Image (cartoon, rainbow, N blue to C red; front, top):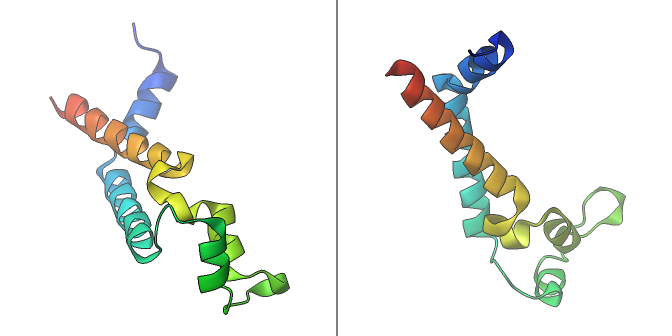
Length: 97
């Protein structure tokens, strides 16, 4: 027998609006991964993105490497969002069948 809390979570996960938001988020992350060259050395980012200084004196190259934007497609947050999107689509499929 299903617990009501599990069913409530499944309904939230099966929300089509959530799936659309996740798809847009994945598209934005893929765009960032396309714009910023991937899998380059640390010196490459420091040399090519050092012209832009952000708040606190941080260079853009430091921010790119710190957030993992130099390897977008293999970061935990990207894989997590893709997994959540897939789970949402599966939940949508099974709850409507």
